[in-house]
Length: 209
Image (cartoon, rainbow, N blue to C red; front, top):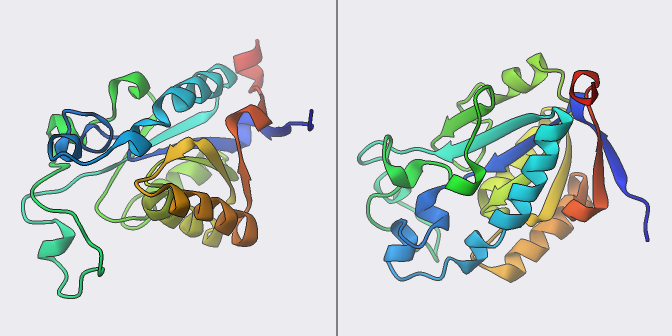
């Protein structure tokens, strides 16, 4: 068995990207629209287990959410949309059940919740400042969609000087091939792609006490 990579909980943040009801629950926007959300639901269980380990170690935990006001959807803001754009209708609306994090990953008091309007969790938010104030130098990326908001957050984090690891079994995609390709991009340009069983944590001293 390969040796596990160890992360210091005092210097590491688990970043849970956009695991929201409208994406990841059958009664959410995309599920009710008849779209196959199985790839977005898949990371919930391994991510819940990883989240438990991170909390036990005393790690910084961050949840990001796309939160929209009425009329803020990309198709209402851009003239040149991606060729294969398929989003439609109101979703992830501020204050709605659909915008909340799924119940198995429910944020706890003291954990960071970052609301954003675009792909990157750093753009227009205080995430960089919040992480650096907590002494974080490394982020573990999880959540959805691997090749969209997760990847954009990873690139932004790298450019801001953070070390980056993508936890592949705790991230999900509409398109499995693009999700796998994201792991290769991370390995090539950004950091490391690892499974949750390939990592371990050195607990904070107060957590270990």
